Length: 566
RNA sequence: GGGGUUGUAGCUCAACUGGACAGAGCGACGGUUUCCUAAACCGUAGGUUCCGGGUUCGAUUCCCGGCAGCCCCA
Image (tube, rainbow, N blue to C red):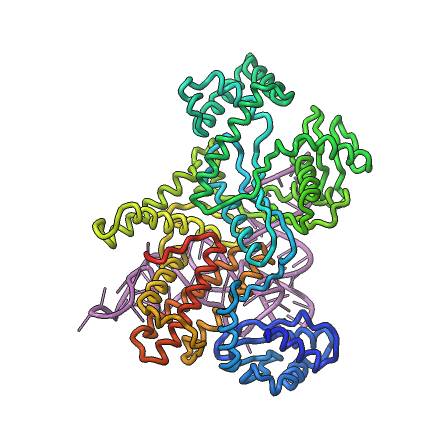
């Protein structure tokens, strides 16, 4: 039985039948105290004004004769220190081993979430500023799926707006025939920059022309619409080239344009329900009583903005999927926007869906915002190439260039390099702002992606060498302290996955995996496995096999590839 | 001016949401390869958790008041 359940039962035995589902058992903070601890007798005693030590003793008393435990002690002000029995531990390992989900509770079964992430602007190349939303969002996507949720991963592209007038004009006037023929995102970026610069000319002729192109597009002019579609297709093609490298896959690409036709209806409803009011020619929703200021839903020039578009988007998603949650992964500059729009959505009656903003700290470069103007815009493609290059240099320095074929070396370098980039981001709490640094983003040692990959490759190699004898079957047993530490930590995997989802922090899982790999590396270094005699060898191999599965699965949930040979 | 967010070892970050002596990585110093992959392992040094109050048996965590950085709104 689950440790939490055992304690919960003991609580209700000790104090009567109320609801103790909040009672939790956590790993011991220090191995000297035992394997696990429960601090909730203290919490309960405080609530009721009881003597905490006595409360803890009552629980300990109720736990007497509990087969799972070898020892239960009351310590300090009322901690319950628990040492589990070998049988229990071995039983749990076998249980995890036998479960296709690695004992991860399927708490999301029958539930649906939409995760909205990455969301770059069309006609521009992705840069390092896009890593965070993409990588964090994708990890959440994978983690929620692992918990049994049905996930719709949606890429809310910036594919509509004034920039398309500038682009169309630029496309016609600033590109060569050749560039137009073999159109690339780089060319689009170039013609946008040229066209935008000309739009700033004194006479305003160019600017007017851009606006005219935009109006034509908005009115459905066939030629401009076809151009726009082509720009979007090329953009998505380029994005998907990046996503393929990062192991990211979307279910839908619904850009702003998709919701554009729905916006007048949203505004109508806002007006009809009295939520939106005129103010200086614009339509606004007053949220000042919630300290959220006012949100503009239609500008004085008749244009809509993000609040309106996001409301339409919620309406559309609720209608299509009826999700229990919609999760938005964007940088933290947009917090006010999301609070405003969540508040309006609630007022409009979308209370059935939980709207969640997962804000992350903006990535900067040497303390400065990443922007074209600062000239520090590092393209994602370049970052990934550099990551690969560095990893390849290390692989070749170690193994030389004779032993393996270049293609597989390059593939390995990609797995390592991209893994390093992803892990560098995922291992931080999303809330922390990251100042981009080549060496940190591409760290290959210590708390890094490659450290985890290396541990995985070593255990895989070990299993291979062990050959047929590795095939468990004989069950688990745990004898030495190092084995027990590793075993206990392996059992924490489901908890780490759940906590990562609850907190919307892949970093919780990353941190867990790093600790696990550290425990394994230490175990591996200090405990002979293949060289051990019969019972010890099998015992340790069984733990290694489980470790390999847990680490492999964990890396998969972070979206980091785990090669079997490094 | 209002709001948000961050402040922890020289640097980059953790700390399972209030628990026991605040932990890792990098960097520094020292050690471990005829031995299962040294991208590893073991050890040493390094802390007034921004400051001041408060609540509590117990605070990095919660509350109040400051200070500093970043962001958003006006």
